[in-house]
Length: 128
Ligand code: SF4
Ligand code: SF4
Image (cartoon, rainbow, N blue to C red; front, side):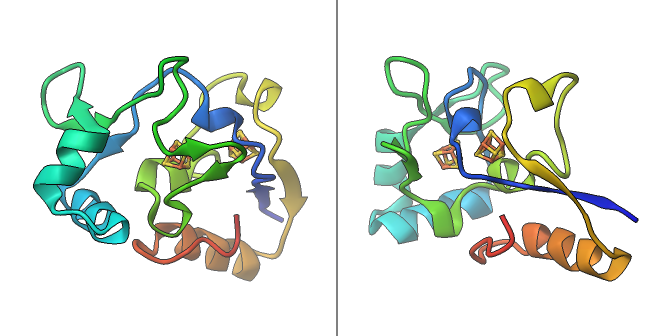
């Protein structure tokens, strides 16, 4: 049976160093969610990626994501795909030491349903 990693919303991954990459589509969605024009959203919340090939979210002075507010993501319903996909669709060696997601054995049908939800852009992530 496949193992699905259930996010516990501990927000550790929102505090790690690293870039949250933004696609054009995500910028459009995030800007609408914040009630801003795309230009204003980019000025306020985005920065050039380290490789200068696009945009990423800004960080707070201590390194946490600009959208981390206390223990919550301020853009949870429209958070970027990179956030949605961790840790089930991408992770890194040793991530279990810092991520509190709980491994659950689920049926293949349930696993596929949850993965499809993660991939469903623009929808809130009921399964995380
Ligand atoms: S956008 Fe939300 S989920 Fe993604 S890193 Fe920032 S606070 Fe965390
Ligand atoms: S993915 Fe892991 S580190 Fe990120 S909020 Fe969920 S449990 Fe915490």
